[in-house]
Length: 406
Ligand code: SF4
Image 1 (cartoon, protein in one colour):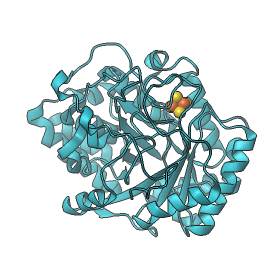
Image 2 (cartoon, protein in one colour; image 1 turned 120 degrees about the horizontal axis):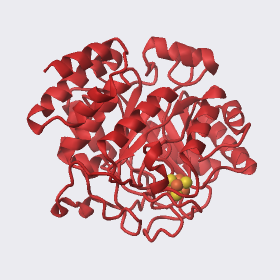
Image 3 (cartoon, rainbow, N blue to C red; image 1 turned 120 degrees about the vertical axis):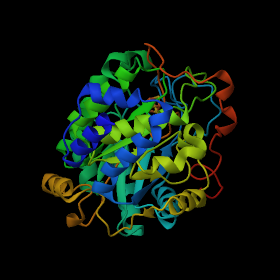
């Protein structure tokens, strides 16, 4: 297939595909799907080998958000029966983080619901970051706290944060359809602030909110322009009690095409399979490992993932390996650039870490999950494919007395 040969050649050279090429990936047929996965897999292996980086979410503060992101179970007016709690203490957060690290995670993503942190919140999270770093040697820490005010990214960096996550989520053209309490530009500004402060930027998307192929290409190209080091791809978890609770638009095949398109557009970036993988990819999850080089281990912000051991078994069974703490995630050219910018993510040169996080919940929280947009829906899944049985509200780990899943 000429298209795939062209995309592989471009991916190996870190050359941007055209919009038409990206759209063509999303338009491929099921008969062509394995060829698409194989082609994008070549690009993935060129830059990341067969390594899979594990990341672990710690929801520092859950629910009761004043923002109205349609996809989010923590939004204003959400009727989803999620855990609600205020800030975890530093030791509580560190204990949760340690469970993820023990399970093989090299990055911990600290997430809090809300529009953005106050300066007092930044002090609180800074103490938590310092505690986690003291108690978990070598761990990378990413913060995901919402919109940042001037100077806050620098304070997080000074406290030891390696990265900051803030997702664009969907295209600029449809952003107003999913959220009215802040703007797409607000999100772009926060990613820029994090980057400018020397933090490794992590920013991604949520698919499955009713968006068109053009919207998906728009947001992935916008992410490429922002040049984050990691791009989490979430698939909407349609939580009952949220405006998008009935949006079951994804098939496993479409999820794989979206991941392949993201890999072709962002060939040397950490593409992370985030919230919603168990719900929408289901038994096809192992194929996604040929496209992404990073996943979340265990549970999400407000929903439960598959058992952490099942994640590890899946990686081993598919012939991939968990990335070790001493390995630099990003390709050398990108890691060196991060190190030069401020010692951030991906650079082993600084001894510390790499990135992505917040919001990864495809329906749970401040990052991934949600929303919707208009336009045509390319592959509407039949109503009987709504797998509400696979959506489980998190009842263990942070904010509970039960052990976390890692
Ligand atoms: S995504 Fe973040 S800002 Fe939006 S409603 Fe959820 S917790 Fe609030």
